[in-house]
Image (cartoon, rainbow, N blue to C red; front, side, top):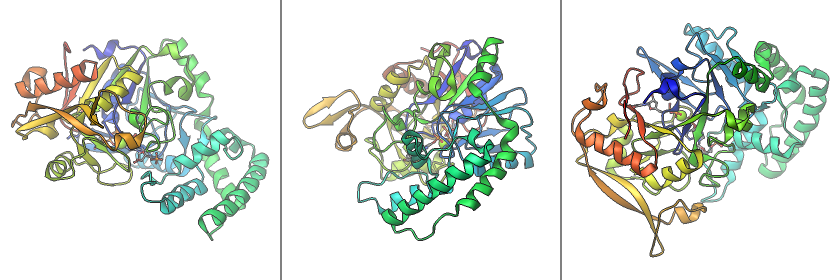
Length: 436
Ligand code: GDP
Ligand code: IMO
Ligand code: MG
């Protein structure tokens, strides 16, 4: 697969997040001039491992480690300034200076402390079965305020202190009343203090804030190559995911146009990232979840603990029905298949190829989460392999059973596998020359 010939490309997760998007962006970025985040916020956690050094990025695009790359954050993303500035500082302390290479849209909505509190309290009082299992980063309340239009504040508004003071005073008085009435919260926010704090953030962020749509338009016009970095996974998409157990943004490839501010026709390709099995963090249906020893083995071998919250990820067999649905919506030209090494050592592997529900077989992801929670997976069984594949560097190095497993996933999901990852390190990557 010639990844240098994909053109303007979007990297998007086709499961429930944590597929390995950070690593894929890091591998592809040598062919690009700019990387753009277009959705989500500090709920994301993208890991890059290079030369034995590990970096976990939450809001910054995964191109920041490369000197030649511009990093942009489009208006579809939400910004938590304290977390973002912390990330920039933490990179600087490790020798990565972002310098003049970061641009953040003045149209990004801001996460405020009351969003984080609202997120936590809403989860705390949710009835049984009603918890989402959010990351507690204030993401849902922030996007809800954006859509309400009454309570959202955009990054650009920080540069009008007179207006900001007025708006925050009114919004915070509303939020205090709301939190007290609904959640019996007795710790009101001080509007003057929050305003002061955000005005300080504004000064620190000033060099980076601009009109990202205009900036991108200029980059595209001058022939620069742009990589769009999805956050979360397609099954967490607010519309196409397993609603209501989803995040609050558009995580599918369609989010690129609105979230970055580029015409939809700009995108030449989509790279769909999938794990060789399934993981999910938080609540919500997951038909192939393995609650016993096999799930535990995958979790331990794959180090399946959240990058953002440290929570143990739920693990299960690959679900070709759910992932196939995600592929239908995002339209990958090619798949990047991650964590193949984690599956070494099993006698056999299972792929979910259908769901049994009410005496019928479903071949497509149902719309309702409660229906999905009732289905029984229909499995195809494939032979496993014993060899450690972590040192394989070409398609031919992989055991035949591993190649057959990868090919079957490509066939079931409906796109060829062009990249196979056999470990977290940048070097542990196989480019499949001629994907089947
Ligand atoms: P993202 O949110 O999609 O960027 O994924 P995360 O970074 O949250 O989670 C993926 C985890 O798997 C990270 O710890 C990566 O370092 C690690 N990882 C990525 N690819 C591989 C792989 O092929 N094998 C193994 N063992 N780990 C991997
Ligand atoms: P990356 O980009 C995995 C999940 C949460 C929860 C649901 C809603 O690293 O793949 P939210 O805080 O967004 O309101 O939580 O979505 N979630 C993720 N799961 N990877 C992520 O991001 C996620 N971002 C959100 O666990 O179930
Ligand atoms: Mg992650």
